[in-house]
Length: 476
Image 1 (cartoon, rainbow, N blue to C red):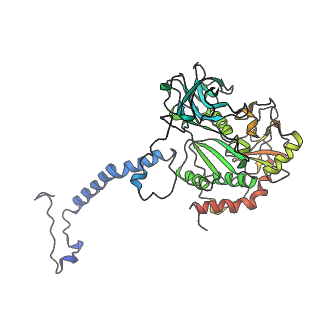
Image 2: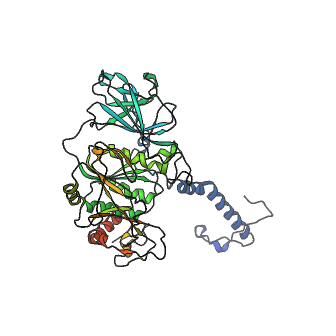
Image 3: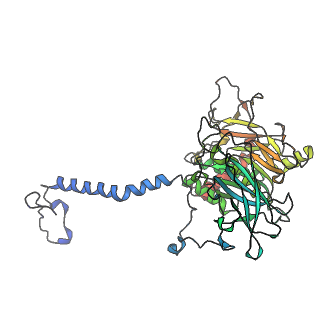
């Protein structure tokens, strides 16, 4: 390896060759050998180790795969299962299916029993300036394909972006009494179908599996593990049985927590891949945050959640992960809704005043938890001062509503209902929304002390610690 005359390595012979001593190596060329070895190590790092690290970093915030051990037959498990077919055409479950060459993307299709048992509504994202002659192509009994014309309704809350939430609806054709799958196409020819989607909500169950479902849209680049767990455990204490999260991306630690709740049946994750097709905005104002679709597609996700749980849940709450609707006179949403429906009836939704609790305020250390300090996120129990509500500024209310009343939902309320009734604003002395966030406020603001959340602390703290322990973040 080394040429003669440049570096001559000499060894002193020992009595036992197996006990060679490094100190016996002559030191004349040791610096050159060390330089060579160092260079070799650096080369190996660049060629083999660095690319793996770079890949892990670049994919950390993409939607991770569920955690868990690899199956024994890993090679077979990594192969994609053969696609299912109906009417000899592949089935695609979404979340987005493109309509031909047009700028329309169907999220999912649902039987809408409010118009009789013969109407399908597909929740979609559509380009507002593109007029498309839609058709419903239905896979019917006996493997026949039937076609009927469809009509589109664009929701008004598009915030002037090119794309908006759309409902694409159609009636059954006379020769198709019980379709199971549908394809939205721009032609009434069977050859225009690229894939079918299952029609959800085909049957109204005799009883709903959930009383309260929370719809969260959209989770992106999320890494606040502590706040996810605090939110989930608070939802449980309030009486929620299911949380539906439309997820674009999160950290691997957050994914570990979400998988924990998925396994117990408390969370449903709906992969949200809209940005693979449409340039989404990071905000709600087009001039300040350019893009083609408002805020990661938050509005179409909320509307899909309403339809998804229309016949699974008595009520849905449309809110964000950092928001908690807290009753002030009772402990749970079940008790709260009983109280509200006695006052206002059952044919309305309920909106709750937004109250902001800034993380920039002084922290109260009574419920500080040392074992949570290294967990990413902020302990909401330490922030109990809220900014006074300005009655002259639009309040970012959130709603709890019977989903069967909803025709069109938006971020802060409802656009249309089946009976034309608007939502009722709940008196803030009965219930209000606690919105914990990092926000600046004027220095002369007189914050209001509000310790209602702390009344849940006795149950919340051990519940959060248990999940952190179960997920391997802390030890007892």
